[in-house]
Length: 92
Image 1 (tube, rainbow, N blue to C red):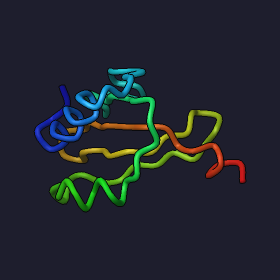
Image 2: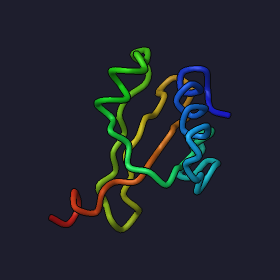
Image 3: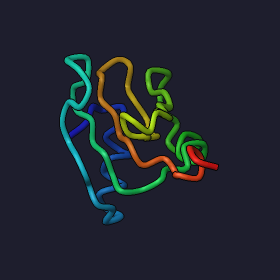
Image 4: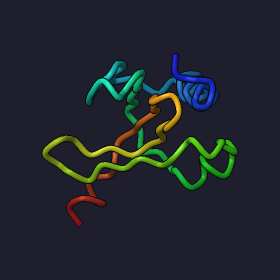
């Protein structure tokens, strides 16, 4: 499971039955537990509803070569809950 800062979001997504596509340390030793889901997150809505602490930031990767993604990363614990990034956002 992800850190205490992201645990509530991760639990909510799992309870909603959204498919988990990856769990682990995808990029470097600086990543601890990153979990990816087959969903496009409305990050603004989630952020306002979850009331995350300041260490949780929106993370977005727009590089189609490394895999586009959008979600939340904890800068304190190096965990993340990530989703897909709409292809329309990358290829208008």
